[in-house]
Structures are given as structure tokens and as C-alpha cells.
Image (tube, rainbow, N blue to C red; front, side):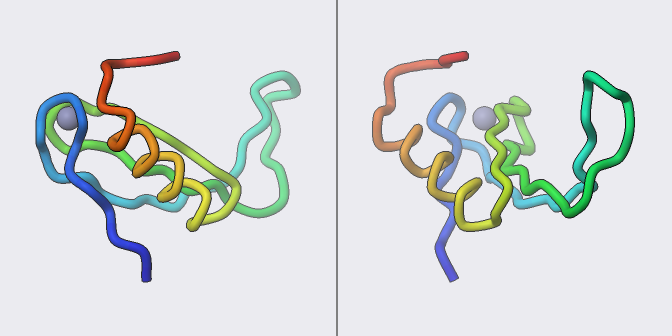
Amino acid sequence: MDELKTCPFCGGKAELYESEAYNLKTETKEKGTRWFVMCGRCTALTCGALKSMAIEVWNRRVNEGNGRKH
Ligand SMILES: [Zn+2]
């Protein structure tokens, strides 16, 4: 399993969450789930349709190490 790096913003511990997919436009549930990586300290967040994607995006952001981007 891929390992989560610590938060690039505050150095806090990141955790992985799985949540039901939700369409904001139609306000209905969608099939499947979404994966989130969130920092327990500053609530920095990344998400992806797959667990591996959420982790990859998080770790990439850590590697960039240059502040909050949206
Ligand atoms: Zn943080």
C-alpha cells in the first residue's frame, strides 16, 4: 500500500477517508465512492475517484512543497 506523507503545510498527520460520491449540481448520490486525504491538523484536502489517485495527488503536492493551491 502507498504511504501517506505528512502534510506539506503544517507537518501534521494525513489520513485517508472514503466517502459516498455526491453530485453537487444535481444534489444526488452517484455510484461509487470518492477517496479523500485530509490533514488532521489544518484540514488540507485532496480527493480522487480511486484510493491510489487521492494518495498520489496528496504526495505530489507534498513533493511540490510550495504552498496551498486551488
Ligand atoms: Zn496540515
